[in-house]
Image (cartoon, rainbow, N blue to C red; front, side, top):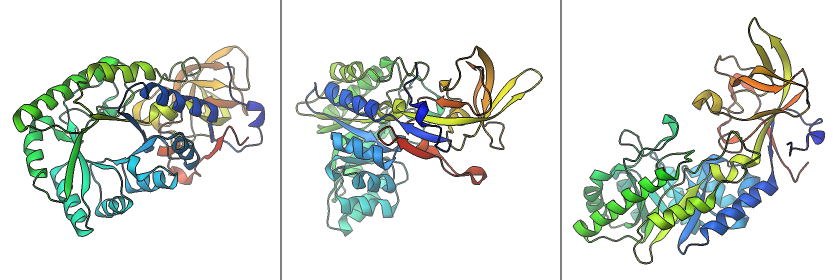
Length: 385
């Protein structure tokens, strides 16, 4: 099955990113429909997954909020038309400049990851005569079944405040006159496919809320449970839209909310991952002693996930229906890690063939870099070509 308009690709310089606008809109519609079944569920798109301004405008127009981890992302969200009242700002290293900008913009909430950060926000909010609303990011000690580099909820991770230290941190925050503590924030990792991981998070959140209520008499109006829902990298054409129904139902059924408590989600990969494809052209086919190498004009600078995480991406030869053979698909970068796939079965491939590296909409274009003085790949929306 080939859903890409390969007949229109011939005149375009490769490599480039291609985004299926219809799939993106259908995915966002599914998110809104499933979250909308439950009162008080709010979805903030995780801008770090892909901040292509045209995609952000589509996401903004649908009514999603934004989850940002830098001042630049806050600015990008605002530029796309996302209301400040729907923007949350996380990250362990917010700078004074970023905090000042976000305070002036009037964003909804800072997800605070350390006591020194709370102290700085309090100081800067006081200087500009504002009261900043914050949620404390709690490191819940919950393991997620995902790659070690993208798990964020364990005690040894740099993110958040260990849940055992939460009462003393809250006590200090409550003394700060320019902060308003409105919630707790959690995020246990990315590319999570097992709902049991989210059940475990709910159970820990329930325990923490019970502890705060019994020990401190504290109830908070907001819970932010982060994101983390994964996509099907192995069969992207069979499963283009994740099971949002099961995801939101898990929280609805397992999270013990207080009356009127609002729940916030930060979904990124699951919204944009499948709509993006990295399109690349075969430069050479090299025959080694025991391998065949397909050398393409895309490199790890265009899509770093396979080199960084040993991530799997489905790869299709769009211009060949010949019998499949095993190849290593590699790029031109002067690094041995510049490999997209090893021993991958592809239709017999020759110089000039066009390959599609699927499921590249999240952390593809967003993580691209200019190593070897390479030009960043262009991006095209399906509505443009």
